[in-house]
Image 1 (cartoon, helix red, strand yellow):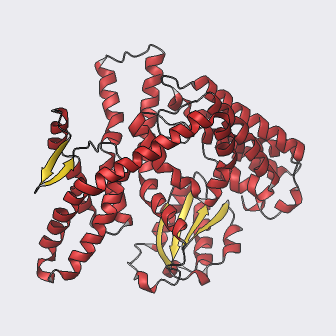
Image 2 (spheres, rainbow, N blue to C red):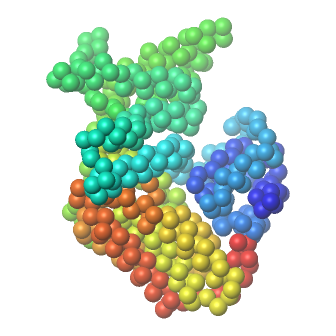
Image 3 (tube, rainbow, N blue to C red):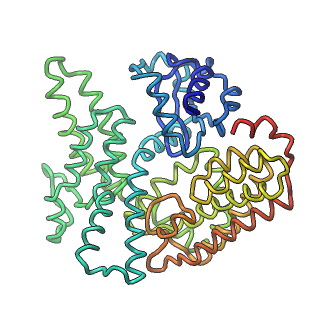
Length: 459
């Protein structure tokens, strides 16, 4: 099988299974943390047939595979078995990341595992909106109520998933983290809010009543703080009492501090960030779209786009929409357009085949085969995609197009833009503009095919 050969070659050039500290995957990338980066042969990894690219983030090697990454991941797990816990103090590459890289890796580590649930629920909401808009289903029907409740579940109880995911990243007991989230989301507080109360007191200390259902920043910062409490309590607790005292004291100290201090401050921070993003596109209009649409592909390559995930999630849960997805979607379709331009212009049959596959993949929202397999390697098409992304993004921002659900924006997921003032038709036009502009620009500007002689052979 193809993935077996890929796995064998990856292991050969990553330093063997003994050098693997941790392995995971997102939608298109195999993410491997190693113990000793000096054993990794980056150049040979890039040349493995089936590998579209390699992105280095601190101690993590992100091997771009494409849509079949889960198959490669499963095969790799079968080969290496369970990876034993490695002492982080002995990890040679530990601590070499700068602060920004660490923050981005943390955000990615927390949000990437829950993105499929958010995207799945978002797609259900989008389909429901389409059914209601086309009069196939009434918003008052019991069927709609049930399906809408199902799709809302992930957003209403998002803090539980974030608590679990954040606990794994911050290395604390996941179930203690979920218990703290449960305290913050307890119905007793919601009932008090519904009674009109805004504040209560805890041992004489005033506490603001806030509904944390669907919130993002409060729970993430709370679990980060709780992880330090847990570690501190663990150090001073006798071994015989750890199983009882450590979780009890962690919850006892972390939950009140979260409710009194961290939660309200983080909620305010979330308000400013989400509000700022909305104001940027409402007031910045076409210029905001031009800039963001033009640089988004560069953000993907550098990993900076992970920093936008909390903003997107918070915007959807807080306001019910965001202005960013129509613009980032335009950038995605621009990558498809550039790959299509390569297909039109290329004379090499292998390159044309790769470009055709990458175009189709990008049109469905999976852009990494187009980015790493075609456009970035040829350089000029990638720059042309930035032009197309700016054109489509500017159009989408000018008309203040909105997304009402989470998901990878593409022609395939247009239902996520259906909603009041969503302008789904205008989003489709923005995507089309991005695709056409980048395709034409790529065809006119051209590229040097000979530089890909080794590169596209990998695919």
